Every structure is written in structure tokens, then in C-alpha cells.
Image (cartoon, rainbow, N blue to C red; front, side, top):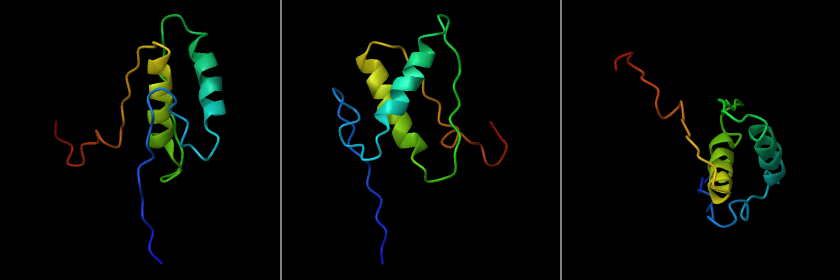
Length: 86
């Protein structure tokens, strides 16, 4: 058996179109929370490896951009310094 990972295409006008896990409802809840904070805030999403956090954040970020929100996405995994140097 071989496992093949493919990226989900995130369509700018409807980023959750190809999501088969029904994640848009979670994005909608989080967007509602974002709306409660006029000055912005930091949100960390944490779960086990392979659960789709990065994919969800990419879809949600595109959804927010489509609604003219300003976003900054920081992926700690991609920005980890393994050797401790800067």
C-alpha cells in the first residue's frame, strides 16, 4: 500500500470548495471570534501532526482575505531553528 499526499486546491473565491471535512463551519466560528476584538489578537492552532492544521489555516486565511481582513500567518514548523542559531 502506498500513501500519496496531495495538496488541496484552494480556490480564492470559495476556499472551502474542495474541503471534504466540513471545516468551513469552524472557520465561520473563528471569524465570529475575530470580530469580537477590534484591535486584533493572536490565535494559535494546536493539534497532532497530520490533522490538517496547515490546510485549514490556508483555507481560512483565503476566506478572510476574500472578506478584506488583514492577515498574518506564521507557521512555527517552517520557521523553527533546529540548530539554535539565528
